[in-house]
Amino acid sequence: MKFNKWTLGLAAVGVISLASAARADEKLNPLETALSNTTISGYVSASFNWAISPGGQAYQDSPAAFIPFQGKNKQDGFNLDVVKLSIAKPQDESPWASGYQVDLLFGPDAVGYNPSPNAFYSSGSGGTTYSADFAIKQAYVALRTPVGNGIDWKIGVFDSPLGYEVFDAGSNPNYTRSWGYAIEPTELTGVLATYKINDEWSISAGIANTLMAGINARAYDTSYNSPRNHQRDWNKTFLGSVTFTAPSSWGWAAGSSFYAGAIYGFNGNNQYFGGYNNNGFYANGNQYNVYAGITMNTPWKQLTVGAAFDYVHNLNGGSVDRNTYSGDYYYGYIDRYSADVMVFGLYGTLKATDKLSFNVRGEYLYAKFYDDWSSLYYINDHGLFTTDLSGVELTGTVEYDLWANVISRLEIRWDHVDQNQFLSTSYLEEKDSVGFYANVIYKF
Image (tube, rainbow, N blue to C red; front, side, top):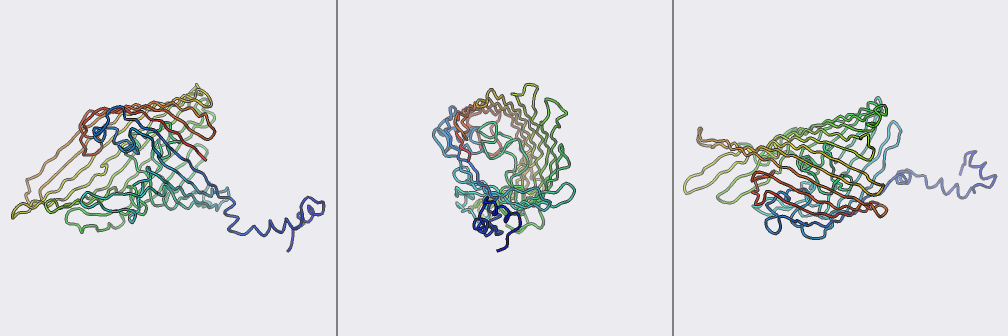
């Protein structure tokens, strides 16, 4: 085995032995070199939820029932929320750098998060039910091409770049997710490119299969007079964003960030509902989301404030084709559903000490739902129904990180809506809901 002159020199003065150098050289094969830079991280999240008001059966039809990951089965008891395991090889600084990211979820919050087309079972006419408590949150190859300052690529399944909050509760100021998060896309399957113009500005652009969650999900056209379950040709989702970070010359505002982005594409669940006298199917349509957010430092360095705006047009919108049999006749009509939803959010974080912080969030929601129906057989038989909805949400969180690597929080949340519908066709028995939450997260 040949050694370079530096290795021979160190061996001559007794710093190393030629045997150890030979063993080290033998380990430098391509596979082990790649694995040596691999990182493993993640967290375990557990909680206690108490639905102060309402409780019992009334909870299912209350505003609290629509908080992401806080369904009825989590109320009034202790919970394992989710376990996340991340395996990654970060990119280095080389012009043709490469890497990967894999985020795996285990537990109740993984159920139905981003099921692939082959990872579900049907419960019959009641629709599609996702039962697996495992999900791939992200899995993408990271590449860099030396164009200008370098373009960084994500190819595979990745988180949606829109939103003030993220799936990982420990990365948010509050434990429960916001209404804004509830109307945003979660993950996408496609390609995302990011280019850093300078230290202040960066832009991103990408293309994905669909706007809805689902690994390798496709857009389907099941509207009237179209072949049922027929795959659309080139019905893709497009996204773009811009980020600005305040430079050091801004004084106390240095490091503050502004973000804006939009996504346009197909969103739908293609849920079939059947029955002899109710033979129909959903055909959801195109949707676009617009988001703008800011996180601002203040002259008082312990205080950080933020604001977020979410707007979605045609939330899960589309049409429902129905053919109803009555006696010797068939009656058919089309319902075209759509919804415009706006959410304004304000955030505040006061870091009292290295361990103690106080976080508050307030949101205002306004939504308008449309049901434009028409008969398949009578030209003048049609109508338009609309429903307005507005509501407010207030959340207060105290975080005290007593143990190393542990986030521990207590939270109280109040939700109020002033109509009988909330982001769905479910009727609300209660217009107010109050919940108390305790959350512990260990990060590794």
